[in-house]
Length: 145
Image 1: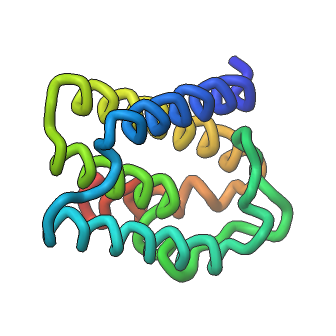
Image 2: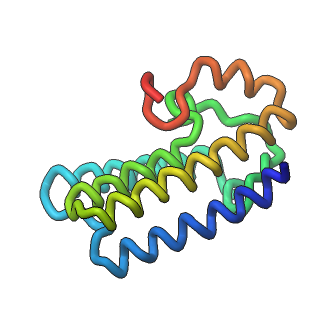
């Protein structure tokens, strides 16, 4: 299986879901709880981007040179950027729950999961120490998932 191609297709699906939620006015929180979750998710994403650096910007799963990052939010979550996306969008969906928004949220989750798995398949090949790191660090929710 070509994980880079699958990752790119998942990105296209993810963007389509996000655009759909935006056009449905269901992307942003509507009360203090959902807005707080979204602000926290945005801060997590900024923290992860700053920790990882500029090398993290790519459309397909692509382990980059420079070593495995296990500091900052990566100490607690293997995929803090994807986790931030999930937290942000599920908060918006919770604020505007309907069959359509939940279906879009499930697709966002599925596409994000595909990207996480694709990246992990390539990371194990590039960084043998990733396997040990993945046994001690959860994918998207610290200490849970």
